[in-house]
Image 1 (cartoon, rainbow, N blue to C red):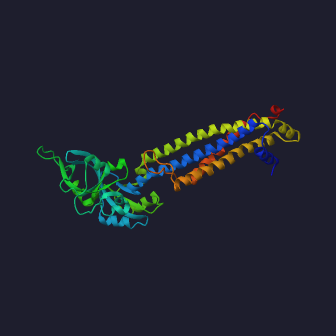
Image 2: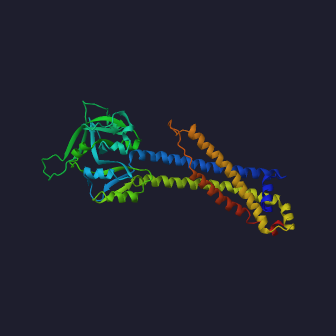
Image 3: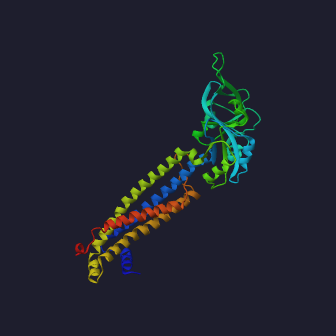
Length: 399
């Protein structure tokens, strides 16, 4: 062990005769602990919120989606769908039709997005498990599953055979005769209500594929998209290559992240913003390290003179106080991380913080990535603050 490390270690753990110096040193250590804990807890909480937010898209959006490169519909035969199902990376395949429709019930109405799906759809997405009132589609006739938001707006109930939900869409193929009705309306029964979140619940509804094809006057092989469930970790380029060898039509393959670009961008931007804000808080906290080292240098002035007299170099004296600065950051950071990890684990196992206004536990996630971010930030900012404190340390000034 070098003499710089031995002396730094002794200075770090020894008490000064000056009470104010001891208080400043303790306060600097406490501030490092507090800022480290705060940064780690906030990053872990935001990781939890991010996963919580994305969990809705994981439920509602498929791993990948095949869309037409041009136009609104893909023309794919059942044979081609079976070929897609045989691709090793694909677990399940399901066609769907997605279009806007006009809903009316008694004297109320609203615009919604209809997803007409096949029986295979629940193999791709477990949307049927989210039906909290009534039943999922039976695929035996004109029926619909709507969100609680739509049901609330239209005052819908389930299995109301006396009052049908009317779905209205524009007619296609008309030549503009004035005596023709430009819209057609199909009555349907609401078999179930699903609940995911407020935004999705008031926007989407589901019906069976044949009903959708009849509603929009489509052929049995015409679909808006093909949704896919794939083996976890499947790369888009590999999957795209496999699909091209089985699908002879131009298409676009869209991942879940691409389907929710705005959401992912917003979450990443917020994550960066939170990190920068709490890094600034850590910088403010590390000003105490600068103050602590400055006071320690003044307090150890006599000992430093003795070290110079014994042959210590300018670099050696700098190294002593650089090590002390890093010890303050290292010890404080370690204690801060231990406290932060303990808080996160306790919240995960025994939730004591709830989302305001709800009974939902505040989501937090322990990630090694967050530990590394905190450590890297503390090392970087700690080195800068320590170097700043030693900027004025010189043999002439000590004398």
